[in-house]
Length: 346
Image (cartoon, rainbow, N blue to C red; front, side, top):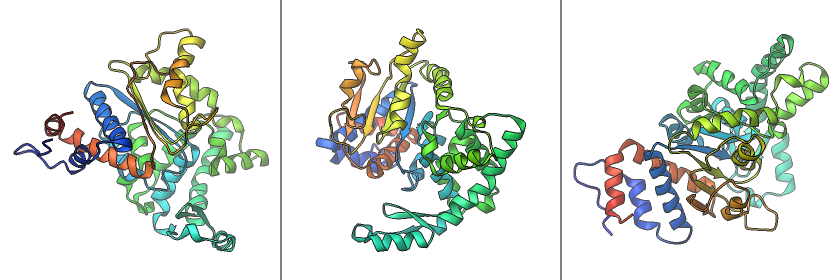
């Protein structure tokens, strides 16, 4: 296999590494998913990402934000936690604390972290005062104004408005690594299913209960699906839209249903998803959405037998930045990337 970059071409270190070393098992799946993703983009296709868990706290934005800016990601479904935690990283980055020894913590250690007003997410922690309370000062007035005026918005639109209005002096983290900021600037199509279970979903519920805000100012999940019907059909024009799933849960389960719902519930034509890849460490198990194999989705008319399908059973904090870095190389230097791919025999 020839993995030499053609003469007078830019260096492509990540792509070259993947083509050289990722030959079998999960490595092969990663390589093949990467190449299929790139071919889909080259054909003019779009890609819809889903973000489960707390990937923003793991700083996925370092590669996700430039991927949005450079046209590798065209829509996102995210948990409310990932949405708000991207903002937290922007405004409170220097106040985060890391705990690399977390595996050896006792209950007393975590109780101490609680008393220090930190909220641990595996090996890092979100500072309550610098993150939650700082953002709260901006969001609650926006909710109150909306309640007084009777205006309604989708959940992410409140965050879009806030992140775009922040003075750069409020940035503790690198704004180029804030995927929420990149998405807001692009006005990227977004759904946030189940946002009620996030920190700010809880804060919003408390203010609704107290009578300070009206629940109706935040549009519902049903309205998110209604908007996604139109967004999907627009994104699917041409070469179609692919589905790239990070983790499991509602962030992925909600948007993938848009295809059968268009076809069977609205009874309108809908292209199938043009690509599917999931990075997950969930084992295949009875009744598990997160662990279901892609073939099962054929029976629900979400995918077809011709859809390129990939499951990468690994840690998304490792795989997603690696794939995005290689894809960014392809996007920036397409001729050199294609030459390298061809030289490697793929």
